[in-house]
Image (tube, rainbow, N blue to C red; front, side, top):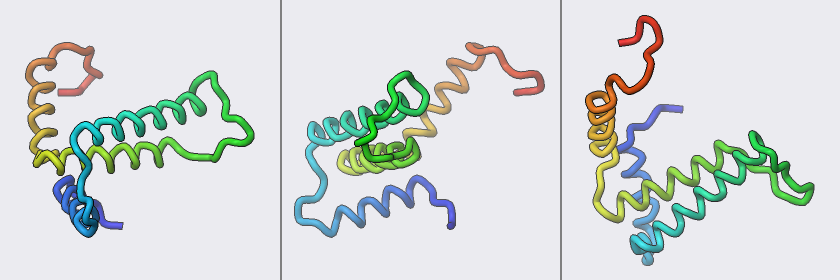
Length: 111
């Protein structure tokens, strides 16, 4: 499987959503969906790494699946607001590489 850039993922999601009359949800609805998916991710992390095991009746899901759901909704949210996630990522990485450059203890040999 070929790796995709963030721009390609945003375009793929936009093409998918574009085939439906309803289009993207409103920003408030999108935030609610994002929160819902984050809760589902938290639940899975708690089942696998926390103190709350799954009930025998609960469907088996994975952290990977929930991260995928969260990423899809995040891309929908960004697309609905016209936000380029690659540009947003680049800005935040620049911020961390400058502002937080000396905040953490570096491994030996790391820049």
